[in-house]
Length: 221
Length: 221
DNA sequence: CTAAAAATTTAGACTTGTCTAAATTTTTAT
DNA sequence: ATAAAAATTTAGACAAGTCTAAATTTTTAG
Image (cartoon, protein in one colour):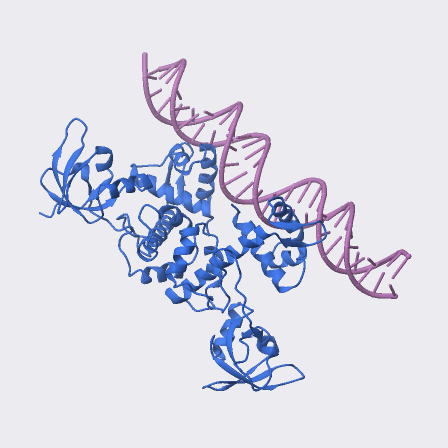
């Protein structure tokens, strides 16, 4: 049984390991967890003792199989609670992250599985992130970033890589909702911004900063 | 903002103050929180500093108005989550206490109010306990203990004073469910056990130990 | 290749909530 | 009324998770 804090470290290590390649650094963890490197080192030793991570001093860190299983369990809980908050309680997608950060630590296998059933076994959370299986497997999605889509291909907005309130509210204001179909009309080479046709709606300008955080499915072709 | 632990102390002080009369003792708190008296003393000093309790050394403790408001807020959250677990997720009434003990500490006013709406503004939790108002008022119920009911009066089972799994499962096995109507047929003076007619069902024997933990409404008359 | 910079770890300390043992206060029983 | 018992508080310590400052290791730049 892990503490609240240990669970958060595992989740963060998982997140960073899948964002970069290879080992996760102490400093990166310190930044993400809003602590200091020295504190991270202490916790890494503890997680290593529990065989949840592979850790060699100065060499960075990697989840063990068990550690990854636990991390995915926590992410599963987080995402299911987000679905609950949006689908059942009517929160907006930009309001739910903080609450899910607390709810994800509630300890009960049965609670999570009943919640899953109650929600109709959703495959994705309100931000389009896939929900790990009860066994601790992360479903694979073949999404690409909108910033990499070529002109003329109709694609659907399937998820976001950034979950901040500001970012999500910006999308709302641009009428960009999950599931909407867009066609890139122009890519500006100097700043990599794109002009997209929102099918059945208006045309919107999207900066590279935003486009690289939008996930779309493979072109229908 | 209180810690998890402080919230639990407030809730426990509220509970004990309403069970006994007058001040709550250090030892009683130590027993209920499964800690030692010395630890309780430390926490009482802290809660007193925060003006959540009235505390004089060696004199026991009492909630301030603010402390009671907070305690009732926590109890409100606990009971609403219990309703959710039973009504929406299909747990039995003997399974939900532990989970609600964790869920009650999730910090979000809006979450609680949306949950309340989602559940249809329930007035009672699955054990018949009244749900405090958002403003922190405990509704008054005019219930009495089954052990005090006289022979021949039909009464309805409205709540329980004991929440242990064992007790609740015992009731289930005796076909005693909330809302059922019972008529006391005999009271045995030597052990205060009662024989009751379960209206539309069989007759069941109820020990004093059980009867004093069953709450019924005032006789219909 | 090596010195400076960057990253990481170690050492020692602080906070929260807990403990045991000892001291103090209150209660109870004669 | 007062001595013994019970309850409570104080003193000092510990574990978890954090911090700062100093030491160590790795990386990088010339």
